[in-house]
Amino acid sequence: MTGTHSLDHSAAAPDAALVHLSGGRRGSTEFISGDRIVLSPASNGGIELSTNDETPPHSLAVLERRGHTFRLSVTPGTEVWINGERLDELVLASGDVLEFGGGAVLRFRLYPPERRRYKTMGEAFSDCVECARHDSTSPIRRAAVLASRVPPEIMTQTAPRVRLVIVVLAVAAIGLAGSALVRSARVERPFYYVERNFLPGRRFRDWDDLNAQARSWCKQIANQKPKRSLGMSPEAAYVLEKTALLPMPAHLPPVYQAFTRIVDVEGYVHLDTNRYSVPERLVGKAVEVYKYPVDVKVLFRHREVAEHPRFVGKRHKQNTLKAHHRTRRRQVYQEACQEERQLRGESELLNRYVGELKKRSPGRGVSSLRRLLLMRRTYPKQAFLEAVETALQYGLYDLVRLEHLILERVAGDFFQIDPDDEDPGF
Image: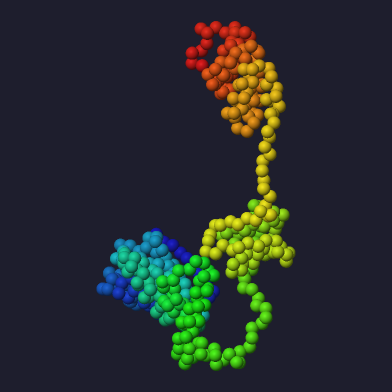
């Protein structure tokens, strides 16, 4: 079986190379200098390249240069897979993977003259991945091979400008990591002192109690301890520098965080998973939410529309002001409905049944009374009242069964029904 790859013959003659992906020379690149290369099995499990004019009997394949192309001819009786397909002859293209029956694997590379035999980053990384894939069946071993092959492959096989960029980026990353560590230590060291000396054994009722105890501890203990950087205690340094200190401004701006929120359909704004009410007229509009240490303020068009105590250390809570949301109550009807007025007054039995049916129905029982009124209008009066009397006697307030009682009493009055003719399966 043969195959071909299309190549641009108008370009300058490229340099060709074979990358060993298995065997003892795994990861090495061997450039092709002659016009005829014989590929033979090596003792280390790889492939040995030679420039013999004659084909040895133990050879696997022959690679011949023909102008700007390279044709691989497989020795009869040898199994060679190129890119996963078994072929006997093929004009190779850059990146083709050659797998021989003995387990050896090569990759063919073409380097244009302008690249000077340098690999791209993608080619270098791809070769490292293939070397790791053909090394062992152990995932840990493959990962170790990949990690050990990538840095030297990139720093030796890629172009100098690519290596320079990588070195600059590595130095910058190391510098940023170092500065981050130093900055983190400067910020977190005071917290370590507080966690080890102030917090152990203390209990706090709320945030105000915590702040009061912290101020007392700082004044009586922490600021009295000499500091190496000052050569004295902070309290002594404050006494010496007090005469040169400038007073704070008369007005201290409050500390807050500002957020923009859209009022939801229920008239609330969401902040830190908690909900705070606003006037219902602002539903769907954007408002400014100011988060202070102890309260929350909501502004609409620079005017304050709501103020709430802030939920501190709590989640999924809700605070509602009565002035913001109207109380929605369903109108309660106390008087009798029209259907009840039409049913009452005709019979004492019917009046008692209507009263009991109303007690067992939701609300005013309009739906049940309307159906009962329809029965009274539909069926004969005598049969209807007899059925109501029977139902009242047995406490039967299911209108479906009441209708069955009525039908039993009117059976045969309008239609001649013979019980023997009825379908027993009906």
